[in-house]
Length: 97
Image (cartoon, rainbow, N blue to C red; front, side):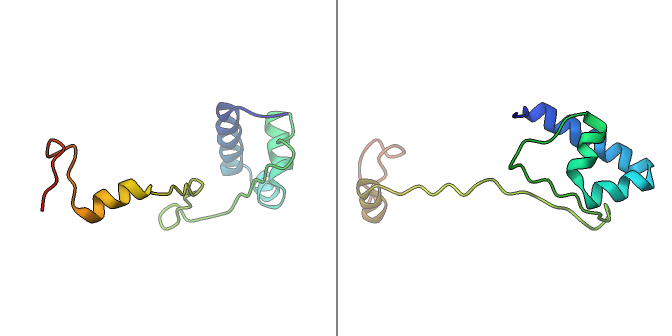
């Protein structure tokens, strides 16, 4: 079963809200995030999906998840243009030297 991005965001918001008001639930959320989600949403997180909840100081901590690395190769023709000083678009297709 997959979740939409909206469902994920709603589930995290519900877990966060309940964990901010209930110490026992907070312990559950930190020790077993899947069980905490199941308790507030009523369904399991998708198989293979990893959820990690951590305690932090909102004044001093921030966790940012970077997107997947996208490696693109520059073509030999584009590399020649850069190395040779060609300014095709900005200079009307003429090389600057």
